[in-house]
Length: 242
Ligand SMILES: [Zn+2]
Image (cartoon, protein in one colour):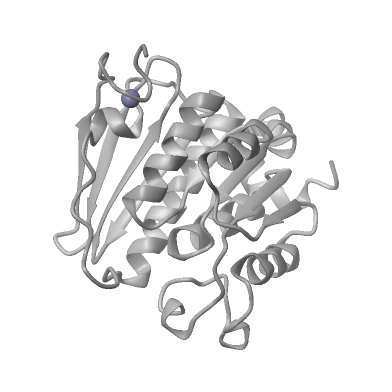
């Protein structure tokens, strides 16, 4: 590991310490989606010194992304999001090894990539992608930090850990998708993406006690947080016995 001055303020956290920092440096995280959630999650994961970060996204930057996708700049419009994202992370922290996958993942590919990483961050938009990534997490045995945002609402959960529920346990049916582009305040994606980074860092560094799984529901309009307990469904078609 390179000099630790960059990480001084977090190494001072007793639950992290030098050992936790070394665990982060050895960790490999795959972030699927370099959009609003991914922007905040990726910046904080790279800043914290996660050693290897994979970024999967098949899209290019559009002007209408820039209210929330703070990895990308106006000059990046038309550039592949993974290219723009990798450049931003390299500028922030050259210690981090970044690998880009400029593609839309199918299930087999997602499972292969999951197996090459320690943890998955779901920064996708839309439940088809979220279900696919959830199945890849279950099949590969990798934990999944799920989040979703709409308007000023968001939700967060650490899923597919041993004994815990997967996304299908919690949402057996996909919620209805909006007919056109989903409304999102950029700050909502930032809050949830930062929470995803914090959950990933805690898991990888071995910080804190792992209790049962809960879903955190964030309502920024009312400025309220709610924690709902989430249980595994023994009959779940994805993580239950087949
Ligand atoms: Zn399940």
